[in-house]
Image (cartoon, rainbow, N blue to C red; front, side, top):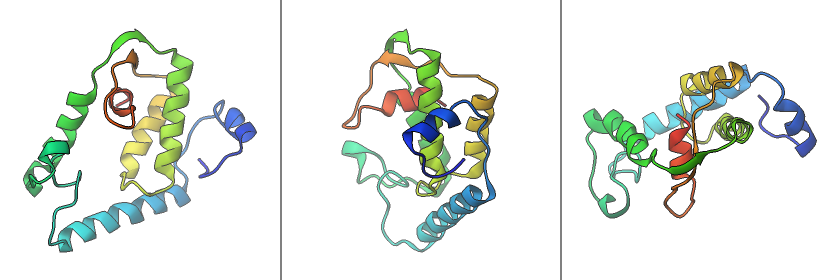
Length: 147
C-alpha cells in the first residue's frame, strides 16, 4: 500500500489486495517505538494513551491496565443502530483506514494492519450500522465496529 493516491489511483487500488510493504512497516515500527520510548521517559500522562477520556481526562491509567483501556474503548463505542452499511462502503472505509494507518503517525503495530488487510483481502467485512456515532468527529462508533 502506498501512502498517497490520486482519486483515479485509489479507485484502481480498491480492486487490488492490500499488502504491508517494507516501507510502511518501517514507518509503523518507528511510530510504535517513538511512543513506547516517550511513555517510558514521560513524567506526565498522555491524553488518550494512558489517561481516561473526556471528563476522565485527569485519571491516569496504570501500565498494567492499558490493554484493558483499549479493549473497553472499542467495546463501549461499537454501538449503533439502523441498517448495516453496504459492504462496498464498508470495504472503502476499511481501505481508507488502512491508508491512514500506513502513514505511520498513529503508533499502530504492523500486526493490526496485517489483520485488517487479511480481512480486506478475504472480503470479510464487519457489520457497520448506519447510525449511532458520537463525539465531535462522528466516526467513533463506525470505526469501533470495524474491528
